[in-house]
Length: 293
Image (tube, rainbow, N blue to C red; front, top):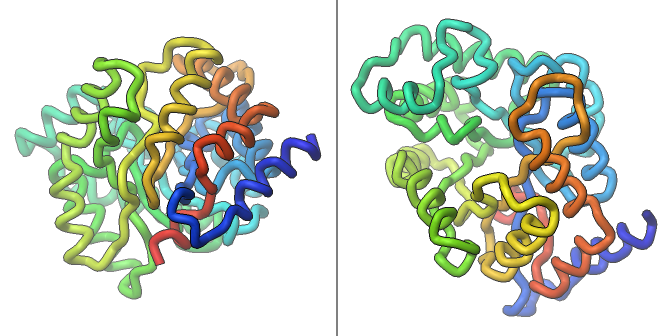
């Protein structure tokens, strides 16, 4: 294992002035969803392969997993709120399937008061467990960028953290070269179309920073070999300040539709070849907060 860490550290120490090297952040989503996700995230954090962890404060494994997350070096691993309205919202009445949530958001049918309370409650839960504000905010299934949701979210962030300092996940689509097939390229663009530009406008007005493009979008098929090929493609297409999201996990007894894909992703990102993939692509890993200074 020490050899693997050394390979990654070597990539981190690549010449800062070399224009051929780019720095990005690797973000793991869904911490707190189950014990398998928590264990995988913490293992990757120990290897120095994770720079951001997005926390689902309504997840079944959040309370038991929060202390270990809080113990990580916040300067090396940023922890953010993974705003969730589709799976583990604190108010069960606000748990909508994604397609229904999108429709209600665009039709103006969301209960603004209930949604405002939910956003505040999730931030409260994060602050209580972590003892600090989130380093950033994003959304489970990218719900943070939807109409009404984004407006209420940024209003709450302005109220709580008038000094700013946070960053927001941008869902800008990666260039076509980053995608292995037309299907995933289309999915990436659909995600961005659901609110990326509007969120960016609000963020600029509020002085909140955002990553460049979002890498890591795919259909969760292909096994470990398929994921390795996709990862190599994302890294080679990466530009300075991009965010690469992933969804790792280890076996769990709780239901998880992405269980197989999570284990495949963990096998690749946690495997001995990961350092070589970074080096071949001339990519360094660095916390997004430092990249956006």
